[in-house]
Image (cartoon, rainbow, N blue to C red; front, side, top):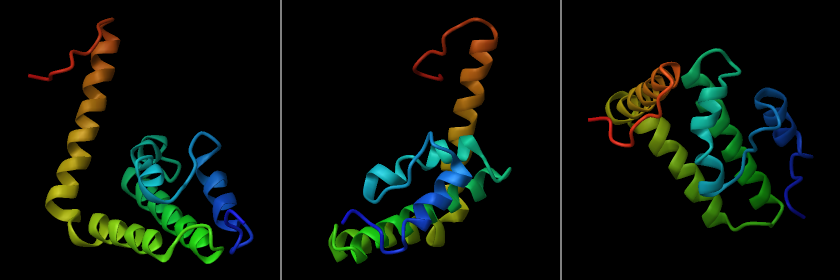
Length: 123
């Protein structure tokens, strides 16, 4: 039935917060969009925006599993991905990823401000 266990309220809430430009999903399709969620920053805190989007992806995964559209292994893998990302390594690796990603965005914007295209290699 393609989801619907929560009467689509989880997907509707995600769209209300993040807009129509980004959809929560299960697996890599969903979690790969979390950087975009951070850039959209609807909660005016980039880390919280990314975290909330990832929670919506886990809810979407459960929704599809509970509706028999995906298997329990898919849902469990998404839960584990979320836990690994947010509950184990926020200090250290995760913080470094966020800082490096934000610095890359600033770098691109600065090159654009000078009318230049950013080189692929920052060194």
